[in-house]
Image 1 (tube, helix red, strand yellow):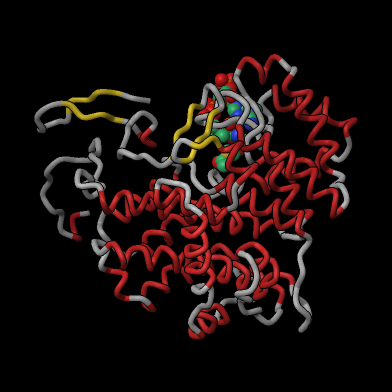
Image 2 (tube, protein in one colour; image 1 turned 30 degrees about the horizontal axis):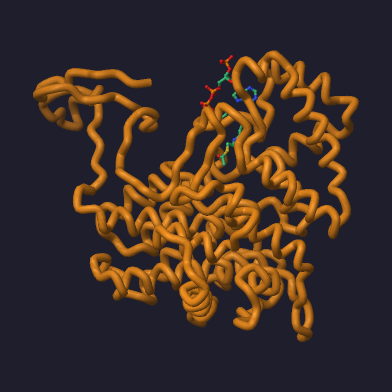
Length: 398
Ligand code: ACO
């Protein structure tokens, strides 16, 4: 993937590295991954410990501030997030203008970029207090916008935030509340969704973080930078694989068909979706944690019948030489779709959930970027393959 190339007419060598497979574009102290060993750490804390003992808002604080909060810091941070959950009424009007079948990711992207017009002071990215205010607003408002987009698709009235609820409870209430009565979510479901948000909170220089950094390097406001991250995540090669896993499992239909399906994959007919990763050449540590969250969710909702197929498929693949030789293991998407479906989310909402979880990571990296004195505007070189200087040809002679 990596070639050293002498650029025609330019001094020295350039690195031709499409997709930046081997090019470090920044320094970062947020997230560490060792793909061969299957290690993921936020600010040095193993993902397993954070998923087990922490909460999403605590992890968001850790990613953004670099250290775990003490009790009063967490209380102040939770208060700050809770009281920024409302959106301006005109943002609601903007969302209401979308077609009934608008994809919620398109609505989320539009609404987040529109937020920059509600908070024009966000342009001042060099002011630390101002930066922190916009960060809190974004983390707080993402679930509100995501839930509004969900209800828009169902033709249901939007449910306003209830600031007496926790971050995840509030999100579930805005999505699923159906009467005037207070919405009470099962705490096992709340915990499971909180864990899923933690698992998605950052993943160093993935496509969407790179988009946020690249756009943010122009010193634009964080709403515009995050809207580009949401755009990158929307793409099927990045945020959309869990939906494909569900389709695949449905198509396989019963465990009896797994053998034929695996033979098809080995014959190059299709991919085993939810397997393989650019960085992990070992079990994705997030997939292990998700399996446990799936058990907790199914205890409440009843088992998703596709789980049996997924478990058997994983077992067979992990013993098959084709997958062993290529170091193909389940990734985070193999089980997450099953959980989201059990939680009553339609497939088009899966990537919105990913975006809400990833918001602290995008913002931690954006903050790091804006405070890194060595960071320059993102502006890669190209290998020019077109014509050199030619004379303009008048229309009559073409
Ligand atoms: N099923 C079958 N074979 C696979 C799979 C798969 N899921 N993934 C990779 N392979 C094979 C390739 O065909 C290739 O075989 P070859 O050496 O015989 O040609 C070999 O394994 C290496 O694969 P690459 O495509 O070179 O690996 P790369 O790092 O470029 O791709 C990717 C990683 C895109 C994730 C790939 O594994 C894939 O498409 N997986 C399925 C989609 C998926 O689950 N994506 C979610 C990723 S996690 C996330 O983004 C949150």
